[in-house]
Length: 164
Image 1 (cartoon, one colour):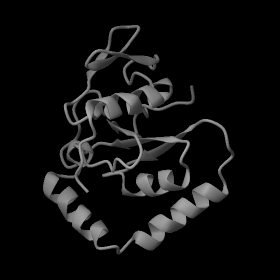
Image 2 (cartoon, rainbow, N blue to C red):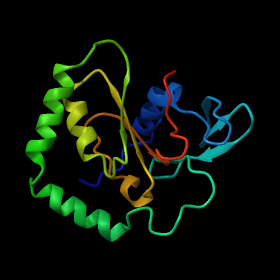
Image 3 (spheres, helix red, strand yellow):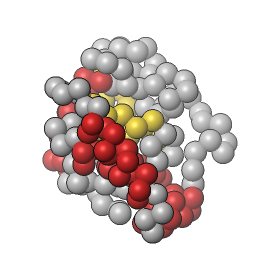
Image 4 (cartoon, rainbow, N blue to C red):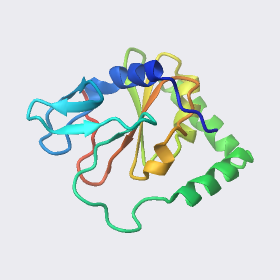
């Protein structure tokens, strides 16, 4: 599914998860400031026109993120329903063990957000955060049935999400 959510929906998704995001440079909370996220120490991270925010620092090692052709192949495979039973099981487990109240569903190394979308379908009151190193995975591919904030970052270094 390739869908770029409208500007308002992208902004709403970022606003919903902003309290969970941290600056990858200094670990300070970030806030929306026009077309970017910034922290109190003035580290800034641009919001791409496709709606994702790159919170990586430094250079990624070659070969650490999927390419656009790899993402397209994954989308074709997932679109064939091969992992639909797994996605349904994840949705069911998330709904069954849902503690209630506000919160965030984070999918680390979430790719195109396929499993995140399934889980959020079972948790209609939550927003999602999809973190992946591969910008091609995040470029307008996060399913938009419900607002999710795609974020480029590494879960191995300093994950960009923390409890508020």
